[in-house]
Image (cartoon, rainbow, N blue to C red; front, side):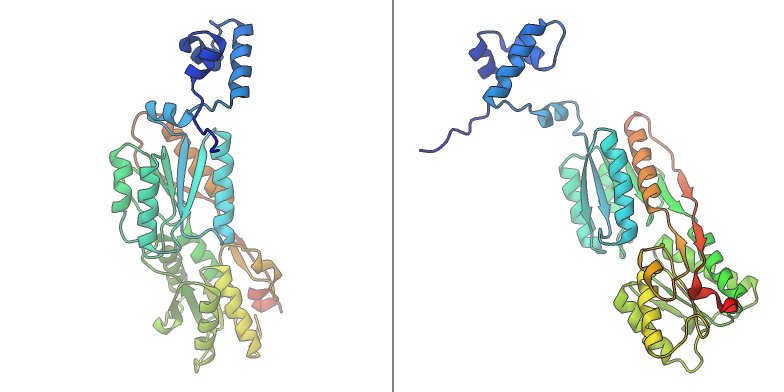
Length: 343
């Protein structure tokens, strides 16, 4: 015989206790107008009957779902995992639920995620853009409905969307300047899609540091790829085939840098004597590789926390916020892979 899966309502509780549904409703909300003993009886009966409060429906009536959406390029990177942890801490402490989706670095999937979150009526959205995202049309429905959108790390400038970043230009300049001060004269840069703010800003910092120190930039010394470990191996093969090899390499993330460095070491190229290396993000791999990889500390957890706080702050105000770019501090971490003058 099939089980009865009928949802228990306040009317069922009222019938069981022989009181009005209004009294049950107030008792379930712990309304002091209802006697404490009656409230307790209502709560105990509701629990024993398996009553579930329809908080989703009540929140929809208030035009809130207490849910925040997040779209990230991928969740399997150390930086993004740290960022998500920061977001979760603030969102959960504020009493919101969090739905995390990933674009897998594809605009098409990012668009689908945006549509899904919009249809789930999220109260706000946090987003770090995919590798090939070139517009934010898919986020406009949120803005038209007054749903706040915050961009972090990989951002798009929009007058109604605050952005949370580090100074990627300055970080790129400092990483390059460090290599130059180690005596490097032939620098190569490995980076991602230059339509993305993070990679373009780091590249501009790289270029301007070379210019400041009077070092010629060779177009052949710019490698653009997806910054994966396999891309690092391929970049190493290109470097080893160069008739005049670079003596310093700045890579826009640590995973690609470490695999590139390892591949060159397999080819008997000495790091940093022959080629000095510096990466970006301070991923765990940067500390365990030999020699330890110099890098830039990118505060993922703090970026996540701040992005979530800005969003919660917007949800607490009825007025629109004008564009604000919040820049967090980074730190250059010098390790053995780049200490050319001290080996």
